[in-house]
Structures are given as C-alpha cells and as structure tokens.
Image 1 (cartoon, rainbow, N blue to C red):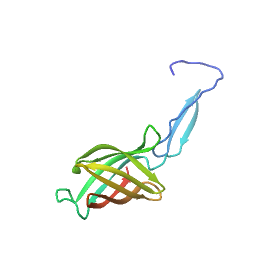
Image 2: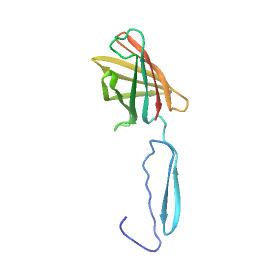
Image 3: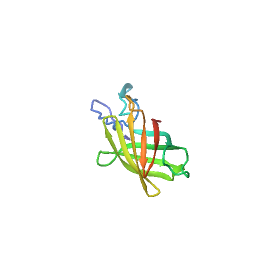
Image 4: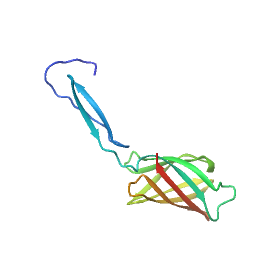
Length: 147
C-alpha cells in the first residue's frame, strides 16, 4: 500500500481463484481484523503422483512398474491440460491435452514414437483415480492421487 490515510473510506479486496485446498487470510485495518475464508477449488487440479504398471504385450525393456508425477491445470483457453513426467519411461514434463467427462479422464502420451492412451475413473472426491493404458499392443494399469 505505501500510503497512510485517516477517516472513512472503502477498501477493495480481490482474491484469485483457489486452485487448491480451502484457505483463509486475515485483513487488519485500523485495529479491526476480518478473516476471509475461501472454499477449496476443484480437487481435480493440482499435483498428482502414482504408478504405471505394465501388462500384456509390453516390451521387456519397459520397467514392470514406473512412478510418475504430474500436474492437472487449466490452460489459457480454459480447457484441461496435464503436465506428465515418468522418467523411467523417458517422459519428462510432457504437456498434453486432458479430456474430463464426468468421472472419466483421458489423455495421450508419446513414448519412443508410440502413442499411449491413458484412461481413468476419478473417485467420488476427485482426489484419486485408477485406470488403464494402451498403445501398439502394450497395455497395463495406472493409479494416481492428489498430493
């Protein structure tokens, strides 16, 4: 603020949309405190982590299970995107379009010139999911939770 004033007046407070859990803050003016509470955003958004487990038809060179991390967020156009990283399968910060329809998530990742489609079902609280993936005869399962 930098300026100091006395007397009556209006203070405008603007708070950005909340992409995470519920939060609160306190504003103190003239010795009077007001607490502002903001409900949590959609728990779909935010950091995620989980495991990919290969199944039938996958190359022996792929690990049987690989950890992954990522972030689900809105893109500039207002759609969903997923920043996906799974170092054990040579995927680092791949930004992919994410389709969210009801409780179903779907996206595609390119690994060694092969397109793998991942599909999952969200839990009722939208914090975890489990599903399957497939590409060029290789399939398996994957799980994730909000961090």
